[in-house]
Amino acid sequence: AAWLAAHNNAEQAAALRVYACGFLAPAALGAGSALAGPMLVAEQRAAWLLTVAGAPPRTRRGAFALAAACVGAGLGALAGIAVGAAHDMSLWTCLDILAVTAPAGAALATIAALTNRWSERFGARASGRLVLALFAAIGVALASLASLGAPAGAAWAAAALVVRRAGH
Image (tube, rainbow, N blue to C red; front, side, top):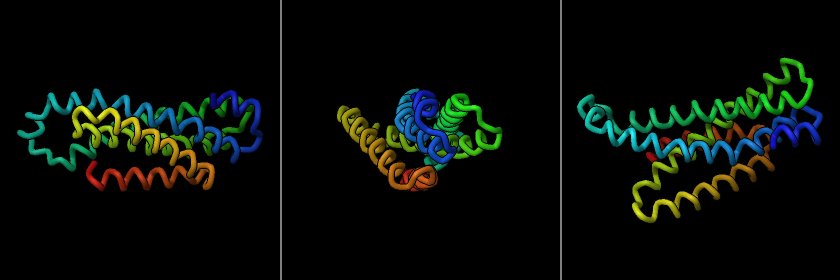
């Protein structure tokens, strides 16, 4: 979708960054949420090892967030490459787009994964709360992108840090 929008509508690098982030936001939030489930299962299976090793909850959350951020950064890089492939851009313009989409993808995937971790503690009601939280995150991400433009990625990164520090 990002490739089609970039190929048919935008001509300037600033507009391409916004298009890439706009299509990246729901994808990165969905990928971060999907990744969180298997990561939580693996963490629960290794709980005894983490306890014996003395890993505090803060370290566990940090490792969890880092894994989600790596996947999100890769997804953001793919979105940037898709937009760059749609146009005959210079290397610097492609790198400029990647410099926005990769951190934005990392931040959004981290927010989604930590939200999934937060919702896990609600048992049977977890899925409903997770879906509501993800739709709210998509709405906030797209609204901030519409109002701030490409710098919204920095706001998403700040939000990811706040969510992580809040202990979710």
